[in-house]
Image (cartoon, rainbow, N blue to C red; front, side, top):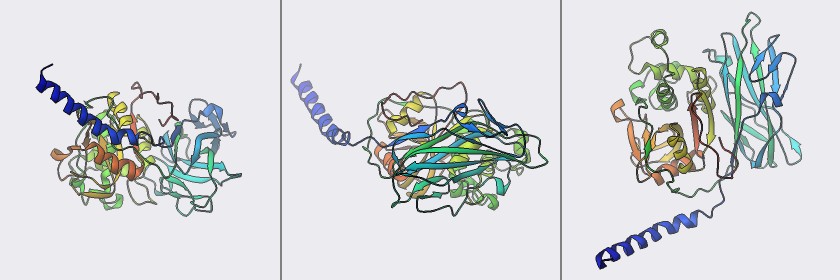
Length: 399
């Protein structure tokens, strides 16, 4: 080996050791506590008005209930977010409830959401003022009260409902829940494990071109980051609104009417906004897709989805270098790929025009506002026939 080359190799080796040092130290942190469960309908209990085979449907009456078997989070959890995929014909709706056990007691039933795809205020809404000594509902998330005893297991309950005049039945094909601990430590940046990859063809929609649109659905602009991101992914899977649907709404010739359509489809009348996480997933499911909300532990896990061809919607909070507004108190954007150096390729709707949506953010910068900001929240939206990446880490499954 020539001396200059040997020196170069030595320098590269030393640099790699210096860079790896902190990462090795961070790798000794305990893995973040997150789990995801998909209770089987057949393993739960249904009342006389509900059939519970591969889907839940009403077989009689106007109301029926199904309760899951007890689910073990595999650790003491502090937060729970439920997800569901349902079809709700006109004048039908569903309710989703959660009850937890731990520390020698069982909590009351908390309502995680009331859902219909129809734009009916009473039937698509989160439910306020449910807090007690055990916990409370923050729009779409159950949060254990700080002074409450620990919680380890939980059950989910689905109510199927229809008006007296309705003959159609709501149908639920999936229910799931993500549980997590409230205080987590993350090794940032996480190692890049899958190399550069990108899901090409994800549309680029700006939320800002919709500023002032439809005040009854929170008026576009910064308020529509979630439905804009959801619309990009739904359209990528060719499941967006048809020309006839867009002609009916927004029916104004506005650019990217898919975004307006999605905002109306996810709007939460209690929250008075379009950023309810499970409602965005539930909307995607009304378009024939599969969708759920979970937390990932790192961008290394996100890389697995990109390698499987599944773009993600991610929730961030904080100051992000390169972000159009500099910092955010809560924002949704997509992850569509990774560069050769592990940086995040994103279709970020927080820009003035569609042409500016495709952006790149530093890996450590992104993980800081994503993991530290929302605990790694993502919407996973994908069609049947596309397989999720396997959970092979030996940790509790989180998708």
